[in-house]
Every structure is written in structure tokens, then in C-alpha cells.
Image (cartoon, rainbow, N blue to C red):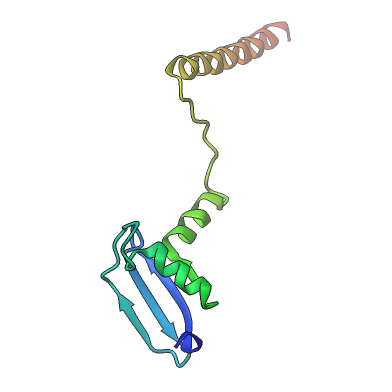
Length: 111
């Protein structure tokens, strides 16, 4: 019964394993999930069923990925679709570094 389920956690690279935790603390795994638009054993169909019965379902792998991206150690990186734009941005960055270095050298000679 849906009222006896505490949480459903999906794990694995493509959410192929579901760990169901019951209210009394008992856990069991559903391991025969596979991605299919028509089969009821699809992870998305399982999530849909959980939502319809108000059972909390969460994707453990997705939460970990979001946390690793939002951590303070992660750095935003610009993605360029066009190779020319990427090369131009790289050259511009190098040019700025050279200009800053030239300014420092000029200041040291003027002092």
C-alpha cells in the first residue's frame, strides 16, 4: 500500500535501481527497471506512479550531480559551440595578459 512507503530513491547512472524504504525502516531494491516509453518498469513511469499516490521519490544521482556543481569548488566554464569563437576568446585572453604584463614592466621602468 502507498501509505506504508516512506520514500523511493532512484540510483544508478540511468536510474535503473530503485530503493524503497518502508515506514518501519525496511528497505528493498527494485533492480529490473529499464528505460522504455511503453513499459511500466521504466524509471519515469515509477516516478509518475509515486507522484499519483503522493509517495516522495528522489533521484540520488541527480541530487549528487547538482550538489557537486553548486559546491564552492566548482567553477563556471564557458561553452563555445563554434570553434572560431573559442579560438578568438582564447587569443583575446592571451592579449589581455600580455597587456597587463607590459603595463607592469612600464611601471617598473618609470619608477
